[in-house]
Length: 425
Picture (cartoon, rainbow, N blue to C red):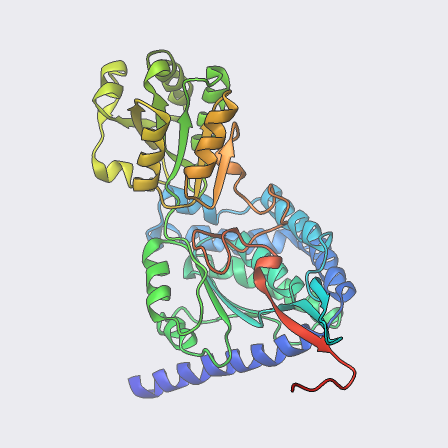
C-alpha cells in the first residue's frame, strides 16, 4: 500500500469512528439513569472477575516499557495491581452512585407574557480523549462520559495499549448487555500519530477534545483542534507555610503533598516558607523528606539553613518535576508568597498552612488556581476526594470547566420554552 493510500485509509477510519460516535451520542443522550448505572455496576463486577486477564495485558505493557523509553514515574503510572484494579472498579461504582446530571433543571422562570422557561442540563455529545500511560484513566473516562450522556473516543498511548484494550473489551461487552448503544465507547486501535490530527479536524462530529498527558501532547492538541479543548499544561503546585502555621501539621502536609505519589499533577513541586519560621521549619521538613530522597533546591536563605540544599534557578521554580526534587524559597511576607505563586504557578493547586484565618482568607482570595487548599494536602485536588466521583482530568483553563472535570463538567444546557400560543409582537 502506498503512503498516500495508507493516509487515505487512516483518514477514512477516523471519520468512521467519529460518525459512529455521533450516532451513539444521540442515542445515549436519551437514556435514563438506570441502564447507565447498571452498566457501571456490572462493569465493576466484571473487572474484578477478569483481574487475571487485565494483569496479563498490563504485564505485556510493562515488559515493553523500557523499550518505549518510559521513566520510573511513567512506569508507576502504567503499572496495575490487584489493588489498583479494585480502585478502578470502586471508581465505577462511585460514579454509579452519583446523581445523573442529564435533565437537571438549572433554572425555571415564568415570563410576564406567560412563557415558561427552563434551562436544562444536556450532554455535550462526543468527547475525544487523548491520554498517556495510565490505563486506569481508560475506565474513568468511559464511566464519566457515558454517565453524563456522552459518547467517547479513547486514544491511549501505545505504552498502555494492551491494558487499555483489555479494559475497553470488558466495558463494551458489558455495555451491550445493558442496552447501551453500540460505539458509545471506542478505542482508537492504531498507534499512528496522524490519527490524532485527523480526529482533531472532525469538529462536525466531535464536540470536545481533552488531552491528558505531557505538555507537548497538550500543546499539540490545543494547536490542532477545531473543537473546544479542556486542558492543563503542567501541575506546578505550591505549599506555603505561614508564620502562624502549626509546624508539625505543616511538615505532614508538605511531605504528603510531595511524596505520597510524586509522578502526578497534584503533587507539590515548590515549598514557600515565611522567614519568621524558616529557621525552625526547614530543618524539620528536610528531615521528614529525607526518607524519600527528595533533592531540595533553594534560594540563598534556604541554602544557608540547609547545607544539603542546592541553589535554585528561575527554571527550578517554574518546573513540574514529577519526581524527587522540590524547589524551596524563604519569603518575607504572605504577599511575597502569593506573588511567587502567581508568577511561577501553573494555576493547578496551591496550599496554605496557617492558623491565622485572616491570612488563609487573604491567600484563597488572591491565589489564581483551580483549587486552593487550607491546612490540607495538594493531593486532595482530585475528583474522587472532592465528591465528583472519578474525573476525566483537572483543568487549569477558566472556560468552560476548571479544576477536576466530572459529570457536570461534561454537560452543557439548553433552554426549553413552553407557551400557550404566544407570538412576538
